[in-house]
Image (cartoon, rainbow, N blue to C red):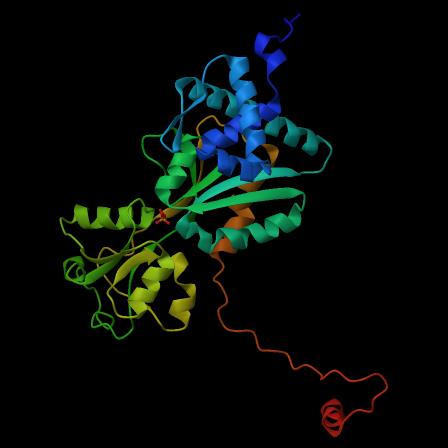
Length: 342
Ligand code: PGA
């Protein structure tokens, strides 16, 4: 027979205290933790005081206005994540046994993936209305931090993280192409050498972006450097800059559906481009997926992939003619009579 689970701590601390602690540690802020958990700040402080008393060592220290987690706090944070992950798995597995397929799905994706992930999530959420999805969209560097902290169930990257033990499944093409305004002198040329492109003013994403990393790598490999004219924090801002004639850029073709169809942008024919990449579904190696996360992963590799591959329709829908509202019992006017008999 196994020994009963009993540590002296269990008598003194509660799951609620651990939940409050975990939120503070994650946000490095009492205020943001209180907001997330819909608690008042005095309640949050009281919970942490009781938890600190139960443990007998400080969990945070305040230096100036900032709070810092202590070594004890960091160890407790790791244990908290393990406890909460195990509870979440248990909750979802029992839900699945009941045939409900409901629970939570936490996804973190790099900025550019927002051009297809929300579209793909629509049918998934319709199929599993009991699943709550939290989608975090941020740049590659931040998504990497979240992966290291094991904050989400699954991640989408444009390139599997190096130096971290992960399982990464490629599921969708992600070509990076060079773009310019249609009246740009290179727009009409074929097989433009990369060295020629490198003389143009470039608009680039912020450092930490996967798009920027891949573009810089291509130029480095050819021992060329880009003439960076401006650094912009979003794909949308870059597209607007290129449309406005500020320069050229290299972006994922997933970001371009609307502007290519409307003729505001064109893809340049450049040697060495597109940079052929893929989107990857990623999770830390050995991470046990919840039933919901496993279901989502299967969905992404099948239906999700085909939805993302379907080009977005950018022609505006024709507005339907509406009958003007008619008072009850009112006789049809000459115009409505004509339309009906037509
Ligand atoms: P980014 O990543 O949105 O951070 O540029 C996209 C990618 O890696 O393709």
